[in-house]
Amino acid sequence: MDEILRLFPEKMKQAVQTKIADKWPLLQEIRVRLYQPIELIFDKNKIEWIHFTKPAKNDFIFVLNQLSSFSLYRMEDELREGYITIEGGHRIGLAGKVNTLGGSVKAIQHITFLNIRIAKEKKGIALPILPYIYHADYLSTLFIGPPQTGKTTFIRDVTRLIATGWKNISAKKVGVIDERSEIGASINGVPQHNLGFRTDVMDACPKAEGMMMMIRSMSPDILVVDEIGSSQDVQALMEAVNAGVTVICTIHGQSMEELKKRPSLQPIFDQNIFQRFIVLKKHVNPGHIQQIYNQREVNILQKSRCLQGEMDWSTSFHRYNNMDRL
Image (tube, rainbow, N blue to C red; front, side):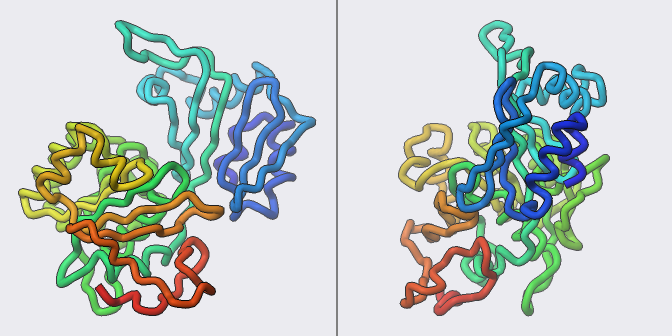
């Protein structure tokens, strides 16, 4: 919580701290808008407002100075991308007036909107998934879901479990390409989240380039990459798989059908890069599994016949009926 509160001037800090003090585990986002009440978004889509605190321009200047250590030039790349990742893996989304150069975004100049997304480390959340993505060895897996469905939370815990070992399965060497510093939340190259004993991290490195660097330098058994999407990402994934490396990735999307309509992703399906596709659904709590498809695009997710305890794994790590059956 401290890494979030330090961003705010004293009056805002006290107001936010009072509101979230006993609800920190449930907090998903803090949205700050110029001259508007502060919005707090919690689990189960619960929204609360801080009406008596409406940030002014000086408040935004304070926050930006805290984010940049008083040097916006240090954040040039982040301003171009529209987000900043801070200690703890929390990501600050930025919006406002955009400067362009040659038709491309150069930076966000007048920042008047902030979205502070709270990173959560949920150890054990991926345990029910592992029997689906392990069959004699780990299978290349793609997590699919819209924002705030728990994709990064899942692959963070998958990474930890694979690199530490689980049940009678030995630990594997895992290489994480953490372009946005969200998986490991590294500070000066040191992950703040627990990623397991045998994990190596390439932090703040472009995904496509980082995958090739990791393969050449660290010889991983498994590569973990967050938010793929570009043609360069896809080409790097194909090269990694052809080099004998298993890949575990996330991607923004609503469904398999939607992904297959994107030209840049067509090689993924043409060449059967992934053996498992895990589709996450927008739900009152992040981490709701909708489908798990095999390489033939058959849904293999086994649910309990009872409605009680149906597979919302965001809050329970118990393994339900038939979960080991592939």
